[in-house]
Image (cartoon, rainbow, N blue to C red; front, side, top):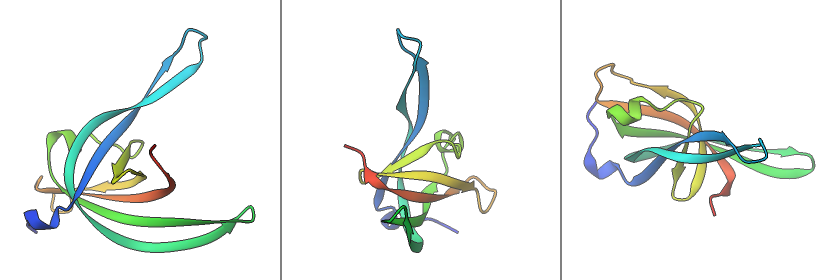
Length: 114
């Protein structure tokens, strides 16, 4: 399957957590950008549930990006920012196995990056 450039409408920033120790020997982590790519975003499903008497929503997406060496290094422990919204990466696949595209299944958080 070929990705058309016109379908890559989202800017995705992939980040990895970098944990270091501060002067008090406490873990102080920050998110470091590891890759940036244009992506096609498709909704998978929407689910609303109640937890602790508070309504929360969870939205799953499929992100489709052109394959690159930087994106091939992304792991499920990383995260992706799309339009200021934080998404956890649940799965990563190269559907054709030909290094043409990568698909990421991501879940959006309720909070945004400030």
